[in-house]
Length: 152
Image (tube, rainbow, N blue to C red; front, side):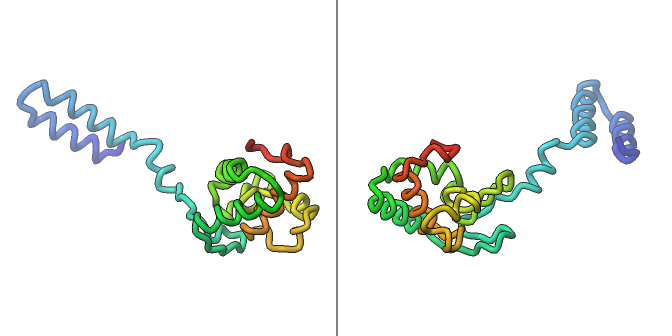
């Protein structure tokens, strides 16, 4: 505890008219001395918004409706379930075309590794392009590669 907190506590004790004030004072000192462990973490944590650059150079700007349209178009083109594709995209990236998971690193709407991305017919396009990601995913699923996603 800092000396200011202790001095304030001693002054309050000296002027306290009853013993009932002491427990409140002590708990107040504890709160002042030990701030919430989560407060620093809460200040640090900032939620990324869809389409914002995350240091990766991605600046895609698409509405959720546009992204769902890309998924539906790709699913139809390759005979896949729109619902399944949407579920996987929500799980993998929360429908954020600029999502990056550095543990892979995985990129984009469906979280492709660059090496996997390059094996698709869309590998020459921007890995953060949500339409290309949806098409590449639907193509891979039609080729029997659905098991390559962590999200099912």
